[in-house]
Amino acid sequence: MQMHDKILILDFGSQFTQLIARRVREAHVYAEIHPCDVDPAFIRDFAPKGIILSGGPNSVTGADTPRAPQVVFELGVPVLGICYGMQTMAEQLGGKVEHGHVGEFGYAEILAHSHAKLLHGLEDFHTDAGQGVLKVWMSHGDKVNAMPPGFTLIASTDACPIAAMADDARRFYGVQFHPEVTHTPQGKALLTRFVREVCGARADWIMGDYVEEAIQWIRRQVGNERVILAISGGVDSSVAAALLHKAIGAQLTCVFVDHGLLRLNEAEQVMETFANHLGVNVIHVNASETFLQKLTGVTDPEQKRKIIGAEFVEIFQHEAQQLVDAKWLAQGTIYPDVIESAGSNKPGAAKIKSHHNVGGLPETLHLKLLEPLRELFKDEVRELGIALGLPAAMVYRHPFPGPGLGVRILGEVKREYAALLAQADAIFIDALRNTIDPHTGKSWYELTSQAFAVFLPVKSVGVMGDARTYEYVVALRAVQTQDFMTAHWAHLPHELLGQISNRIINEVRGVNRVVYDISGKPPATIEWE
Ligand code: XMP
Image (cartoon, rainbow, N blue to C red; front, side):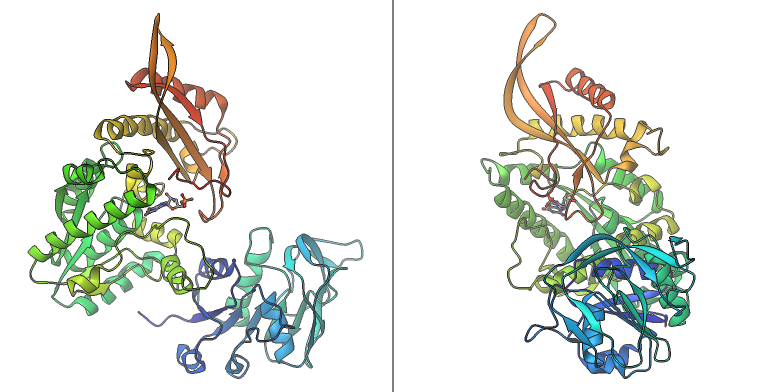
């Protein structure tokens, strides 16, 4: 990669660490997250323009809790500690931290006390006495009760007298609140201030420019060798395909395994966009027969996922082996996948569902792995897709799971059910795309993060015309979420739900009842299986 100015984020285990990196990158500065116990030599080689220490679940007053490597404070670059990051900074530099008996969680207002560079001019409102007040989001039990030598107090609340501290000479700052969350309205401005003005990092992380940089990087890696890539129609693999095609043209071959559990007309759309429109080499493998056969009689969700994943790998491998001179396997891995798999060996993390469907391929195929999106967040992947000329409807598509309709047909998967579900789903999505919410001016498709229909293989009684019916049920699911880890059900207008229900019952033969799922995650998950 080209030399960007870089911010290093050391992760002490906060659930918000990714948000810090996202906010920094929104300021057009490149940032990477690494574990808090990373090797000091790595930190030196990384040559950061500044370092941010994240929050974390531990208490610095406890035995064997993590500390920042000492080199962080010796490099001569600015350091910002957030929450636990501030506490460990205080403790390591000679201050004191008190173990909290009463925590402070949620909204707080802090008074800004001085004109330290970090907070100067940032405020949500000011007191009658003219003192700036920031609305912030707090989440802590412990707090700093004595600042290290050289620091001055720059913000306080009643519950937390040392809410922010600064040593402008060394450019070390600590904030007890969380500037990375959207509940801290000036948080983004604070982080921008830190990386751009305090660290002096160049604002050169821009997706439109990144296209050329990524192309050069791919060409250097690949030379004149051939690359294969599995495409699914999802955002990540689509953007990876468009980028690779732009970089290496005919050296790229895409394999599109159609398992017969796709959305309505999806296979045609994928072929239309990639093969016809962009001129990418795409091998379309229609394997729906094989998949459906393997799934006969299988009702357990994890079992279904395993079968679909294994069959996918089998077919993909078979296709890859035909391309004898392929040397590279490209994957649409994105930065959150990289961070999550680094963190996935944390003890005690319970597996709820197995989401990754194509693991292990590079080893069995003896191919080198090429991951052109592994540094990008989802928003950046989308921006890149637009910069590459992909249709907005594809780039802003809701996520669709690898096993597709296979996990949206409860219990055994049958061709007849899949056809019926694809039709109901298309009616639902079409209505969401075409209904504009007057308050926001956006479509309900844009206002929801993921929406889809689910097939319930139970029959209920209805009446159509003068006749009794005894047919299947379709459930509609629409959620709003930032990260898909937690989600709210979407408050779709009742009239819209009514129209969708009518259309599904009238147009989809075999369905006489539609229900709307009003469960949050947790306790439910987004998918029904
Ligand atoms: P859950 O249902 O766990 O879903 O709340 C969270 C997100 O993950 C997607 N998902 C999957 N994606 N393979 C995938 O590629 C899977 O097996 C899978 N299961 C769930 C889900 O659609 C949602 O976006």
